[in-house]
Length: 467
Image (cartoon, rainbow, N blue to C red; front, side, top):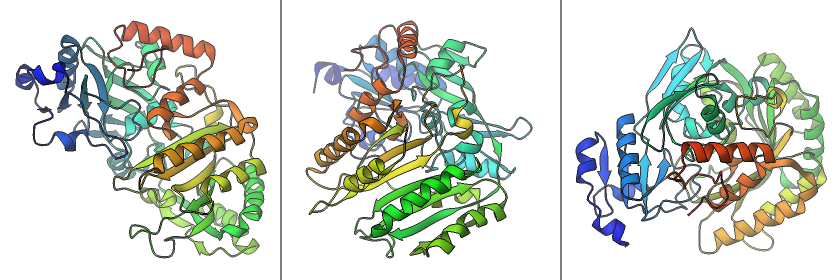
């Protein structure tokens, strides 16, 4: 271990913080460092499990006084550069308060809150946040990265629903930023996934009136993928913005955590959510049922509290890798690339699924108040794999690279999407998320708000800002 980590006296920091301050030899250190994606290992010199915004400020001042970089973790999704022994890791998971303002149709949430309690509290009033496919993901990081979910075509992206952010900056000061108050900070945060400019300890976000939706999955045999794909393109193209949908090639691993009808099987799946009249949703899906009977049909009317049933993302921590980009076209090049990505190719494949989502709609509307700018595409593609054994991470990287090389002509000009990438993949995606003028403006914001590059474990906003 380095001299910095070995000789560090954290007792002064402990005396100031209400939360826990942990060193590598302390009980609870490993648990505090562990994120949801256990493919990544963080070994910071110090961990601060913040109980208050003041704890965050104390942690930042301590880190800067001792020459430590600052990394931030809420749930452990969306990690960019793992914390090392020259870093202090701020864990915001205990900043998980949720307050619903029914009249204003907003939720104010702590920096470590996940979408699940926000959804549950909002639904009591017939409202819903613009969450993604997995309610156990952190609300703040997801929103700051763009936020594409099952309500996106009708209600837009989560980044556009943000009303205010309370942030602890690199000098330890706390400020609240909105499109009108400290607007350049607000703009820079909203699109960069957080952690590169400060620590967001609270967010206020708009809610939308949603109670019941028509949603689910149609599972078809893999050998019908081409027919299902062709029909899906025509079906989704002609649908109103009430429908947000996806076409998926999935290969479910043969493990006990997977339900028996899916275990070890591969499918072509049509999934989605209709936020509109339930009868209209049923009619939309009935056209599939009459065209070809699916192997499994889970589409039905459901309370939006069950939206996690649509994507069926794992809840328990797993070692995984993902990559995603925006497309400017959806054709058989994409389908062939999806099939090749998930195919076993003569042996076990670490790929779980390749999914193309139909987005756009309201989300295509420009919003000059935020830096998130990938709004021209109507489709996106996500690749996800499981790192279950030696060599799986290298094989996944090979498959990701091969897929994007194959689809070079089908990718949107701004093809990067931060919320579908982690680690090195997320750092590289930054180069594809912003046009030149936006990147230059973000670099200026980084130099202004974090001139010493204290927050260098987020995405790079200036060339050479990662460790």
